[in-house]
Length: 466
Image 1 (cartoon, rainbow, N blue to C red):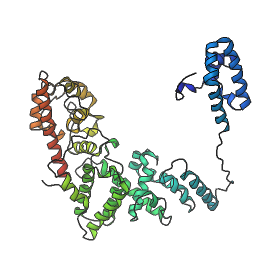
Image 2 (image 1 turned 120 degrees about the vertical axis):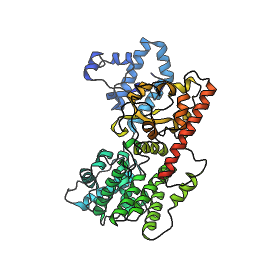
Image 3 (image 1 turned 45 degrees about the horizontal axis):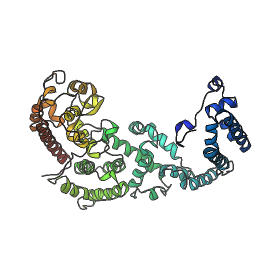
Image 4 (image 1 turned 30 degrees about the vertical axis):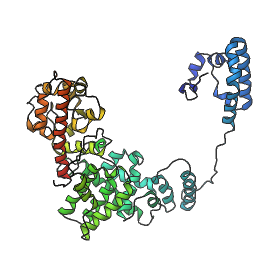
């Protein structure tokens, strides 16, 4: 008889063998363990009979507990069981329809849509699946076809339209391709006319966008693992813009603009909210700029103002939930960063983001503020094996360790990790025996120096001149 109504132990199940082992078929065994069989909840009289028998047994076996049961539990138990037994489940009976009758199936889908749009939360993709069925368009079949024909789409989504909301992302792409606003109220009313053709174009465009995202060459975006994607909201607009460029065979300028657009949005974190509104605006501005001589897209001016500002900083980014944090690691991949001990590129490794100044070292020297310790300025990608070699050593110590740097901690290996010049000099001074104040000052110099190098690269890919 627990006091906590949310205790997970209130309801449990046992196999037939376990029930027999503890003899729970017998009422007395139930009473001793304070276990009410769910079968006694099927009929109210069955519950009342069990409750009264338990009351009598408790009176004889445990008078003190019996008094508590009578005062505090008997009434609430009965109320709860009565409410449970009287709960009414809505039931809608639908007539059987023939699978070859699309009109009848469409009417059933309309009912399904109406009921569920005010009940269990369904995505726009789910609701549009029902709506399009009336027009003999099988959205689930189109999704399966797209996954069969496009390897990256299948891989990133796991073949599931609900994973990372890829079904909705595809519909946003389709809306943009049609020149529409990708907001939910627009998506749910997408016209069935030409839908299958536009869906296939959008699937090809999404596959192409994922190819660009994965690419670790100079024209790609360096997302060597899906977890480092700086936001799924970028994919539909990237796909639609790339499709626009390729269908019109536009030249180097628009393709360069598209790369610049992508990085500006990552490091401004513009697509962390109001994704649909920004997508439509960006699509109109970019395509208008390319084909009609329209003004420079807003995002480029915003990047010059914010990313070009003297006070622009990335240090508060301390988790890959941040687009800036993820974007910096993608720049590591594009810059050719290699694991220190293995000497291989990071996309060939199972890597994690690890600290350059080990967390334990910083704590020993009085630096414990989470964002300062975990800041992107103090993080890079190395293998778990290499990180274990570093453990909690002082930077000055592990820089000299041949197991960490078999070929030496030289510039060509460390520069792609944004570790060169002043940052490396500071690491070489960060020894174990430093007073806390000196260690804190060195760490601050290190973070500033490395951040400057990171921001230089961010400004380069964003086309921001300072």
